[in-house]
Length: 353
Image (tube, rainbow, N blue to C red; front, side):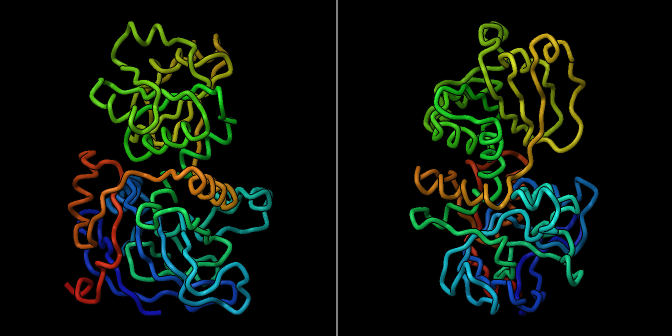
């Protein structure tokens, strides 16, 4: 399938029009027209090789919503016209212990990311959602509930599942006390989802500037993390803290906020942190943990939950040709709270620009 999109050709080059071919449809594949694609901070990291593993040319995008246009002869889950979604991975070994229990994101052989990797069978490069079409095996496509607005659903495929997964892993529900550090793309979804689960939600921020937003998103309060008196009063008051900060930072001021057996789970920063003190960990039997995305079954569960609760990210719609400006704004945290590309603006003329 010949298609087109926008690609990074080096770590310091702006994204530019790019034509390429998708693989042939296998028996268990679906083909889809991409309608919307979210812009994730990891797209920016990958395009600029911040993690040292980028391969070029690269078509980013792993928050994808579209409609099925063709199916392989063995496909049973989808038909032409269905609304479908694809997240951060498009394949896994399917046979290891983790895959068999629905944790494909933890595949022992490594899952196949939606972009910046190689197809497990042919070795062809995987290209993401900043493009017009996608081919994916049906097991890694997800059903989009009819109650969800397709134009806003795309960020659920990364920001949504990244924050939903730890909430489910640590059994958050009515009566749970959840803190959320950072009110950006991930943080605002953590607030909405935890609130939807019936938890008491507190946003932790360096100032009171985002208090109004926090309450509007469903939080019960905002705690100013630079206010030593307020932080001391909040000691031992959380069962779970979700840390969405995407850069190196200090955890020591947050650890005393956890109750006995409480957990601070990292979902933002991939890389080094300031040196933590073990004192609050040992004295209070507290934990620091990490969490990636969820598996396919849990991602479907998250979409269904959002469909029932009408939970959607707050989005700013952009044209495909605005992606470089969006990357610049994303680097400055100038987005409220997720960018979504309207892929109807990606036309042959745009791709030839």
